[in-house]
Structure formats: C-alpha cells, structure tokens
Length: 199
Image 1 (tube, helix red, strand yellow):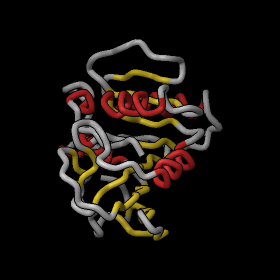
Image 2: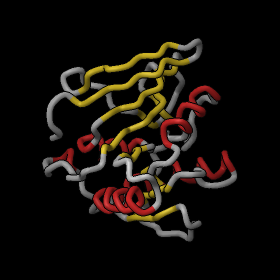
Image 3: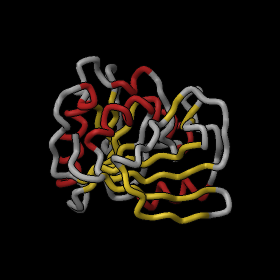
Image 4: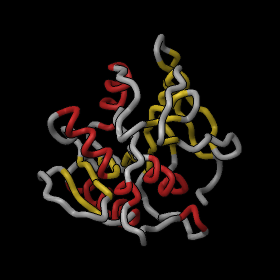
C-alpha cells in the first residue's frame, strides 16, 4: 500500500488548512478514510518508499480504494507511478503539492488540504459512483493534516520494526474504536471508527 512518504511536497502549500492546529475540522459530506500500512514502531516509510513489499497488503489497498478518489502527497504519487508504471487505475488521484506538474486525466493537482477535499467531492460526484467516500493515502504530513477530518481508519499492521523517517500518529483509543480485525500470516488488517464528533 503506497502511502508512506514524508517528502516536502506532501505538506501541500504552506497555507494549507491545518485543522489540527486550532482551526475547525474541514466540513464535508464525504466519508474520509485514512488507509495506511504501519510497522510495530509506527514507521510507514523511508526515503519516500515503503520499507516492505507485501502483496497481500497491496491487494487490500486496491480492493478498498478502487472506484473512489484518493488524496495523497506528491512523493506518494511518484512512488505509485514508479511502482505501477502509471497512476492508480480506476481511481482519481488527488495530489497535494506546492509545485504543479502535468498529469493524466485521472490525476488532479491541488495546492492545499481544503482544495483536496473539494476536489474529492467533485470527483466522487462526476467520475465515480457517488458513494460519498474518499481515501487519504499519505504521506506522513498529509495524514497529519487530514486526520482531524477523517471518519475511519483502515490500517494494515505489519509485524516488523524497520528503520524509517516517516511515521503514522499513534492511534488514540479515546478517539478511535476498533471495529474489525482480520489476522493473517504476514499482516493484520484493522478498521477503526471515530468516537463522537470530529474536532
């Protein structure tokens, strides 16, 4: 699951809405779902890449996100293109970056968090089935900025503790309730729902 980087472009623009720093949570009718593979020590990436390759997790990411908008930073996007040879198929990739670049039709470039959510709303209505759901796929700063607006977490726990430079925030049991667990040989798939209203 390629949602692991912490490159500078995953911050979006400097004036991107930071709802975790005292502002109100981003208002949207979409269900926002953060999807992440995380190691025992919280690591999600190193040098813009995942420190593992687990086909079972990649298949899980594909099943979850296909047919929905996916918000990510530029380093995550570039990692996906490098791995697949193309952007995510059957999804609209919404790429947060302060440096616009030319993209294919199913990729939208935005400069801030609020703009990313609005682009996801439009893509859900116009390009997908109108399910009312969009995914947040990293990297670290994109998760940090959007987590206050997220409704659900889809987490792959990886039973390793690699070195890394990108981390996912600790999941606070006062904020998130585990609602599903599927233990496999190499990973554990978990789902969490937010307890109460968003910040």
